[in-house]
Image 1 (cartoon, one colour):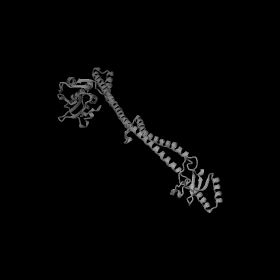
Image 2: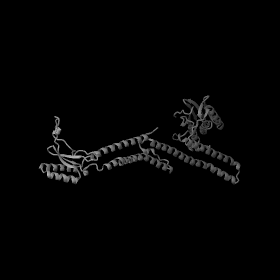
Image 3: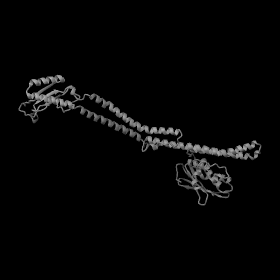
Image 4: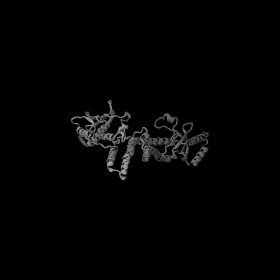
Length: 453
């Protein structure tokens, strides 16, 4: 079972989810890293304060330094001080070079600030001597991460929502494009455009929707063929019925005028029989074409069936020589005796009809692997090569058939082909080298076997 669409959707959702998680994680980390740094202008301000404190300290003006620190603390609402870091080792211990060179009591302006601590950190600007430091608690206005909550809301709500909407639009478009084309094709088909097809519009797509489009195309093709076939059958039937109806109308008019009815009754019976046969054959043909039944319920002996058909043909065509080569037995299972009898009878009657009086019609049945090959050869005029397939078309008649003396209406071979195919076989026509036509029927011994012509 084709589940390409399922895997496409799963892959799209999985990749979309992974991409969403990666984007949120990446942006979250990058944003937090960026927001943890003090703004450049604030860093320069802190450094400037350190340089001012160092200048006042070097000048030895303690009173000015104290006043400046007091004014800074009041203005920024924070704490600030200038301190020394003189470390005295005890118990004979020694200081490492790091402590001899001085060490930091607070954080550098270049360092990151923890965004989740409520208390602001102590910032430090060391003096040139390495042992004196300017310390100040980072003023609240300089604290980074002022928009952290808004950024977190965007990353956790707005961004996932936007990505999911985009993903939904991609999936929706992927699904709806072929469905819209299928809907449009269905509307066009219902409006009478029987040639509309969908699969070619989907390109190289190969999933459940493509399979649906192929199914629609097969349905449209089959339905279109049936509609066209029905229209053609109705048009042909109307055309074929027009001539006998005209003759009946003329005969009835003559009877109404008082002309001797004994002269017209045989003609009326003949025309009525012709119309009845025409309608029955047309209905049978329409049933075979529309329903495409599988005729596989009977078991029969093909030799006995041929004997019965040949007996009727010899009675109907006493001036013809019917030569039969039949095996003693030819059993067939899973077929239709009625359909095969009608098909073979039509083929043999057609051969007798075009064979001149005194001519020979040869019927031969040979057993082959999987079935039987029946050939019927006549000594008629044959058929033009380009018409060998058209003779199986309903209501098609060759020029010789139109000039023939019988009232045939061009349905016999069309019915024969469809009946033989419904029984699992095939039928084909070819011209004989010596003249005349050879009809070949292949019939399976058991339904399910089939061979090529």
